[in-house]
Amino acid sequence: MCVTIALYNTASRTTDELRPVNAGHVGIYVCGATVQGEPHIGHLRSASVFDQLRRWLMYRGYSVTLVRNVTDIDDKILSKSAEEGRPWFAHAFKYERAFTQAYAALDVLPPSYEPRATGHITEMIELIDRLIDAGYAYPALDDSGDVYFAATSWADYGELTNQRLEDMEPANDADMRGKKDARDFALWKAHKPGEPGTASWPAPWGRGRPGWHIECSAMSTKYLGENFDIHGGGLDLRFPHHENELAQSRAAGDRFANIWMHSGLLNVGGDKMSKSLGNSVFASELFHRYSPLAVRFFLTGASYRSILEFSPEAMDRQTASLDRLANFLQRARQTLGEDAPALPEVSDGYSTRGVDVPAEFAAALDDDLGVPRALSVVFATVTEGAKLLDSGQDRSQLTQIVAEVELMLDILGVNPSAEAWAQSGTNATVETALDSLVDALASQRAAAKAEKDFATADAIRDSLASAGIVIEDTADGYRYHVKDS
Image 1 (cartoon, one colour):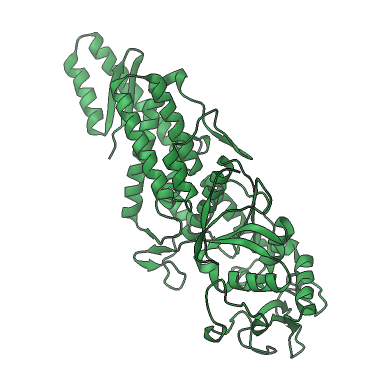
Image 2 (cartoon, rainbow, N blue to C red; image 1 turned 30 degrees about the vertical axis):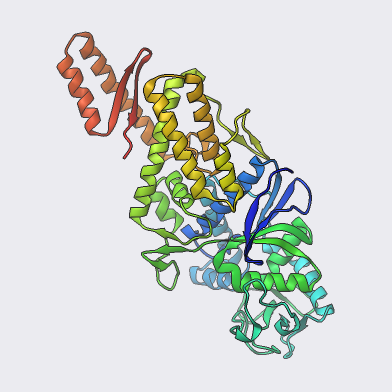
C-alpha cells in the first residue's frame, strides 16, 4: 500500500515502519484480561488505545485481525474464587462478562477472536514439548511435575526490556524448588493438594495447568501464525510477561511479533494506580459518575505512550471539551436537517461515503498514533464549522465539515453522533428530558411573542440562557444548543 504508518517499537526502541507480513492485512495480538476481578480504568485505557489503532488501520485500507485473549485460569483466579466461595470457572466467567460489558460500554469494537486460555491447553502442551526438545526447558528437578524455561539457555533473554540476565530478580511465579536457576520461569504448574481437580489437565509431566506466559505464545501464533505484525498490551506487562513470551517463542523457533506496542500507565492522585495503594478506579464507579463517552474521551486525551493522570478535575476538563464538540454537531445537524451527512460506518472497514479526513489528521495518526495532534485538527475544523454555522452561509461546506468531524471522531472512538452513544442509557434519557423541557418553554415563548408579550418571551429566553441553553429563532422554527463551557 502507498500509506506509510510508523509505530514506536518497544523492542527496537525506535519508531519503525509498519510492514505487514501479509500485504494489505495487519495481525494484532493484545493481551487481554486475567479475569480475577472487576475491570479498572487501566484496562479500559489499553482497550481504547488498540481500538483506535485498529480503526485507523481499517480507515487506511487494511484488513485487520485483532486477537485479544482471556486468561481464565491463574493462581489469582483460584485464590479469589475460593475467597468469594464459588467455583473458579464460575468466578472467571462472572468477571469475563464484566470486562465484555465495560468494553461494549466504551464502544470498543469486538475482537476478531477472543480465545480463552482453558480452550488452548493442547497448543500450550505442544509448545512446551518443543521447548524441552530444543533444550530450552526442563521438567522440575524434584519430579514435582512443574516445567521451567531455562533463562540462561536463551542468549537474548532480556532483549525486549534491554536488561542483562545478571541484573534480573528471581522469577516469582513458582517456588525455587526444582529450578536450575532462580530466574527460570514456569511453563507448567503441577496440580497441588487443595486445588480443585477441575483446574488441572493431563500432560506428559503430570496433571497441572499452564503458566501465565506460555498462554499468550500459544494463542497468538495459533490465530496469527508464527510471525505476525503487532503485539500489544499495557506497559506493566512488558516485564516479565512480554519478555518471557518473546524468549520462549523465539526459542521454540517462531519469529513472533515484529512490533511491540505498549500503552502507558495510569496515575491516580499522582501515584501509580495499584491494588497495594488501594487507589484503583473501577469501570463500574466511572460509569456511575460519568457517561461512557466522557470516560472514553478522557482516555483519548493523551499520547498512548504517556502516563495518564486521572482526577475529577481532569475528567471535568475533558468533559467540557467533549461538550464543545457535541454541541457543535447537535447545532449543525439541527440546522442542516435533511442535508445532514450520513454517519460513518465501520465493520471490516470504514464506509466513509466519499469523505476523507484532513491531511494533517492523517499525518498525525500515521506518526505513531499521534492522537493529541489529531484532536487539535478536530477542534480547528470545529472552529471553522462554528463560524459557518453562526454566519448561516454555505450549507454545503458546513455539511462537508460535519462529515469530516464525525469521521475523525469516529476513528478515535468518540463521535457523539454515533448510535452507540445515542442509545447509551442515561445520556439518552437526559437528552430526551432536556428536549422535552426546552420544547415546552419554546412553545410558551412562541405563544407570548404571538400575543406581543415580548417581556414574557424575553424572560423565558433569559431563563434558558441562565441555565446555559441558547435558543435561536430560524425560518423553520427554533433551535437550541448548550453553551460551551
